[in-house]
Image (cartoon, rainbow, N blue to C red; front, side, top):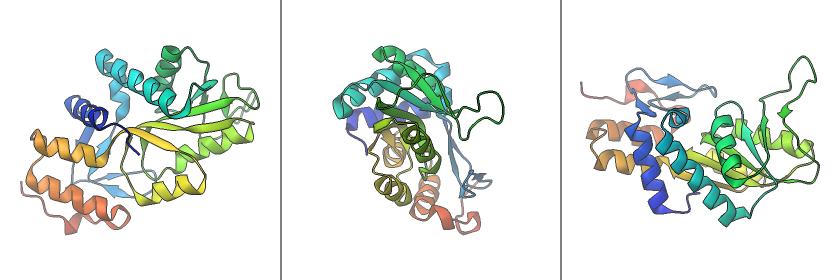
Length: 220
């Protein structure tokens, strides 16, 4: 869910400016889920551009307080959201923890790194939502540790229905600064992509799990 049109459009524009969005329909990327995709979003690049990372942390902080109230703790999902999560926690004057995909095999065998008390209100920060599976595993770990999850905030979502269903099933409220549809609209308007590329992206987004590069022809 995107709450602010101006924020969504500006965030999309900033991601395009720094080439955080990569498009390659002829040689698609393979996601961890196994899906083939003509688009790849690397929001970690925002950390290398101070004005952009500052904008993102401020928008996160504003929307988190408006939507959930001020939590006790900000939690980042490893590894992509650790950096931005720290920035948001620092800006809001809050403690920070991060959640590994699974517990370490050595030492204290932590899955959650940092100090977290049972009953604390937590907002989870994520960089990107695709199916939502890995993000919700972090929520599961936090709940198992006794945290009260107020919701999740992410920079960007592809807007897949499977993600919306997964978040509904886990009773987690999600908001994002921008979305795939905002990105596509800005990309076409600002001439970042051609009409053929726009068509390929629309075909893919309609059925990402079943998308086949051979069915989508892009003119050289």
